[in-house]
Image (cartoon, rainbow, N blue to C red; front, side, top):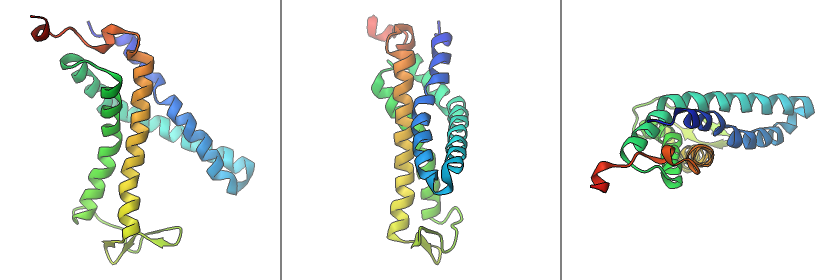
Length: 169
């Protein structure tokens, strides 16, 4: 029987810890706008990321967990790798579409005065920036996967997997 209760708890709590870290980072980044601006910036970032995490969890992570639970043994490594892929693959996918000309690029895009795209071509800084966006998303996803494993899977054998009949026969 699928452990809905503990899995629901894990999916509800897992995004909160990494998003709290983003709250601190968003507060530090928003210091330019003064204390009130920093607090509003951090809260916006926090709620935006938590909402995005729940949507992504329902669309991609929960079905992936259900498949893993049915056919494999769910471990901390599988949770981190799966959640890292859920976090990083979309960013890398759209970067690849842009790189191969299948998705529009903003002409003369720059970040902090450093050009990222010039004449519809990525610069070296642009390639690094867009690739590293996927890396950061993958690390964020892996952190959520580890938090999910810690809350829902670590001490709950039914949440790890069913006994696979082929292995016990």
